[in-house]
Image: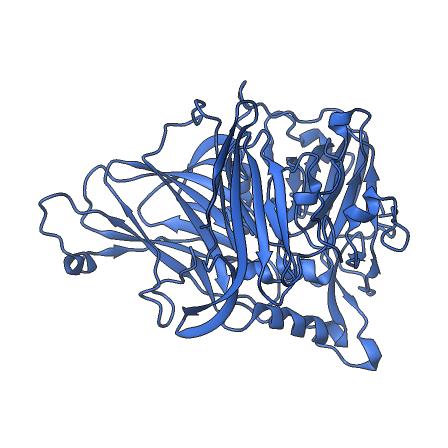
Length: 571
């Protein structure tokens, strides 16, 4: 799943439309069938029309709705020239790693004219997640919400809202994102930034030529609304707020949290946040902007713009308000933190605590079987063929974990693992700690070159893992919202500067740490398969900030990875 790891702190510690029909199963719940047709269709934003890759001709894509315990069968048919895979971000995929979706990790991509059925069951999860393409930068337009309702008869641990509304943040590029990243990887420089941020695919009135392309949330006075917020942007963490309204955070990454009120929240790519919006008790004779803009921690260029939607109160019955008079109402704008407000980011993160109730306990691993210390950051790689590249000092930008920039294989890691054919695909020797220690947040070393390899960590089933993620100052310290597929983890600690193994563990929160899928962590390796871990800033993933964990089968049948489906795509 996903957490903003190292977004402000320098280290973190983890533990570890579509048509559909329903079939009843008295034990497992319902089997829900969806069909995703991957097609090109024209979309106009910012007075710029282009052909985009999308699902079922929708942008954003169709909403997946299920209940905890439901089985999903989602047939994806590829009608475009690009290879495609779909990742169901945050779904744990217990024993169903073949359905996880990252290209060349759990599957080979679905090629033009081919199809694949993603088959998985939602176990022990409820809340908001999302799906997106997981190959190159196609997720810029291929994404949509996943709404997981509690089992029938089980209430939310908060008052039932009057209405629920998905709110997805995205990034719009006038150019083709695939061409942008392709050019960047060739030249070694940073990719061009987006032209706008979007809310539910719409950039809003603060951008040129976009006043008609504005998301409007129409509400009634005296009601509660559950906003399911999703950051599907490629490369930017975002501040979000609604003018003159307070939001109550109740859930992040499909995990209930101890509720807290805030006027502004921070959400990183890959993260989801459910908030309760209580509308004003009477018609306010005003409209209100809801806006999002980036939180910036790095030194590179970024899209310094603001997306706005409008919160509009429905006028009372028999009132004289017309659409024209509504336009004349005063419009209030929220005040968001400064672009680099790390103090706000740190304070907001500290408020996130697992609900840790009898019904929803925080089962933090208390004993640790294996400790890992990973440095996470940028670096360089040499320019090929004696050319001069556009990265630092004529090199190429790279990124790494423990100085290993991950080289994607040409066949799927999970396939190679399952069939015992790892030779020439990957090696099980990913370093548990930095090979050459240094002052990680101090003056960076002169040599910023990274190594390259397809290296993985192999874990026995049910290993309890503690992982410290240490940001580095190489080419500038910045946020890394790390996402671990196949697991939720507990963020037991975070801080600034270098991690101190002698002093810092005493301050770990082992009682009610936030449980996420994208940050410092503890987790239990109870899900056999191959699981991708990567930065959810897409540019960093493209540069190599990624690796994989292999969790071996356990002793018993219910602890073993299921065999691959017959329609698994071939490379």
